[in-house]
Length: 80
Image (cartoon, rainbow, N blue to C red; front, side, top):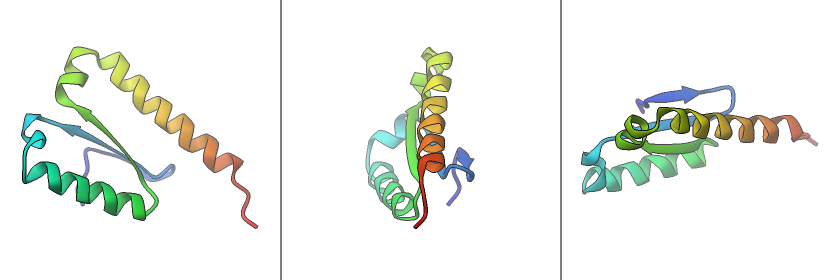
């Protein structure tokens, strides 16, 4: 799949969605892609284009928070 932003190190996908993603068939297709990423071990963060345009610092902080979450989970993991 092609994604907007990928962080392989922490298995994060960030998608930036325009208004066309609110209706079928894109909405349903996006949910299916989210499922596929989830079952492959990726966390998907979806932000709307409007959210990014209205408050870019907040959008960046959301992405950073997800990276911190995944980094902490990865560093705290012990493989038995």
